[in-house]
Length: 226
Ligand code: NI
Image 1 (cartoon, rainbow, N blue to C red):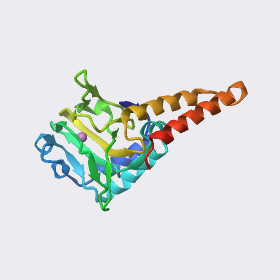
Image 2: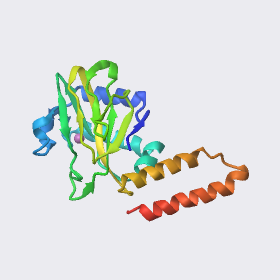
Image 3: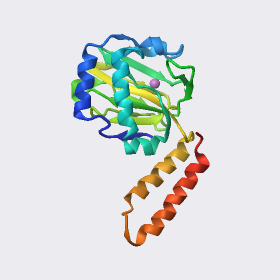
C-alpha cells in the first residue's frame, strides 16, 4: 500500500527543520549504501550522530507517533530514528532496494524494515525533478509532495529518486517495523479502521460499532507479533 499522509509536520516544524539544516554538516550519502546501491546513489546525508539530525529526527518521529493515519496504516512496533537527505545539482538515487534488516544505530538491536517513509521538507516549487518513483506492476508511480507531507510505502519495493535539476530537495526518511508484517493484512486493518472511524458515536449504531471494533481487534490479535 502506498499512502500519502498530509500535514505530518506543521509550518513551525518545517521552519525549524529548514533553519537547522541550512548550516548542517552534509556528508556523502554513499557511506550508508550497500554494495549494489552505492554506485547509483548521489546525494548528501547527515550522519546519524550529527546533533541536528538527532534533534530533528526526534521531532519527526514524535510527529509520526501522534499522527492517527500513520499509526493506523503502519501499526508500528519500532520507528528507526529518522535520517535526512539532500539532493541538488543532478543528485539522484537510482533504482535500488532497501535492505530487509537494519541496525538501530548506537545499539546492538536490529529491525525488520516492513515500511519506508519519506517526509518532505522542501516545497516542490523550489526544485525540479526529484520525484520518488516507487515500482509497481504498472511500471512505477512518480511522487512529488508538498512540504510537511509524507509518503508511506512497502520497503519491499524497488524505488528511486530522480535527478534534481534545479534547486534542492531535502527530506527526512526512515523505516518502520510493524506489528503486522504482511502488507495485505495491514492494509485490510487500515481500511477496517478507516470505516470504523466514520461511524458516529451514540444512538442505535453503538452495538454494531462495538461488534465491528471487536472484529477489528480479533484480526489484529490474530496477525500482530510484538
Ligand atoms: Ni531507498
